[in-house]
Image (tube, rainbow, N blue to C red; front, side, top):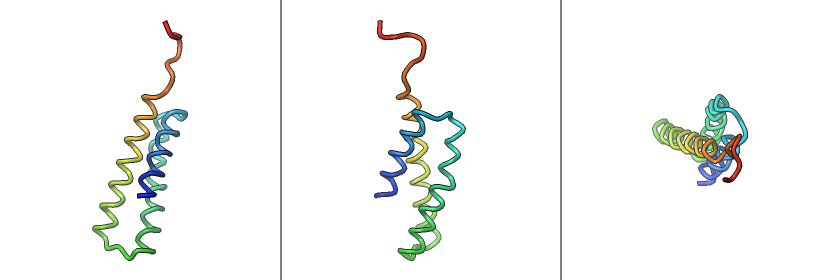
Length: 78
């Protein structure tokens, strides 16, 4: 749960301030988190794969949400 929260918060922050190409940055971040959890909790391959895909999806959806939360350039409040 902590890793999902971390990926969500990180994704929203990165999506709001960085260009979309930085979405690829989640792959090594999530790989490091899953490697840590596999080593500490003795997860098998399929549990690690499920955890990896879940954390990657959460981070990337949060990144897209951060892109939607960007302030609109050009027009002010009308």
